[in-house]
Image (cartoon, rainbow, N blue to C red; front, side, top):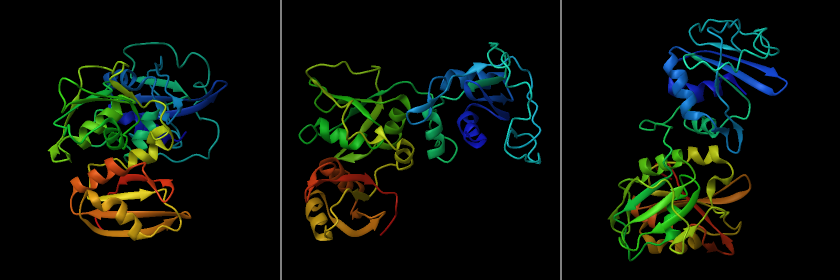
Length: 331
């Protein structure tokens, strides 16, 4: 585990002064020293139990009984002294940190926190967004369910909502509200994914309506006859390559990226499959890593969104295609 990755995960909660890593019989461990005690408390409360990478490296954070870390080389890191020389990789220069006792003495006032390896999805998130969180994100939200309103009840259904919202995280379940036909509840895989949805989809146009997306007062959607379950669906995009999928998150754009295409597909076939949803301005068929893919630019964002929600995972020449937004400005 690189010191830079640890810094990306812990720095959103306060100024990190020093980081020391070392090996114990239980595996890789680290000590992080903050400038302020409150930052250490906030970090532990915010990301304890989360994973650095998708499905692995779960954080187990405790306060250390050390008052000050000593850093001699910059493969450890003293962020208050950027001129620190580097040392060859090897055993930590901190002779006592690998011994029992330095890590697990719980002191609520301490400004140093430590954890063993088993870290968290927070790392994949931080790495995906260039070392921190995008502006407007707290990274500490624990509300997984969002309320979507101002839907077009004549055009929308659960699967169309799944196709749109699954761009930002895994979907647990969706419920269309019978007493409010233009409302729906969508339960995301975790609180950060719900933050992405609220941030990127609030105000998006779909089927002639401007969506309103907010956190719900309900923590989850109760399973019932009026809910659609998506937990174990293979179409959930974040079951693998979560860090890569986080990097692709953005507000709706005019351009969509189409993948999982047959090798002998023609641009005309792609256009014929999508053009009912809006005016197509341009297309580009290309090959990457031996696989056919396409970019399709529509006249506006709403047309692209309609194509995505209606045609993602639909068959084209025998294969179920995958559609995402592209952040490219032109072809």
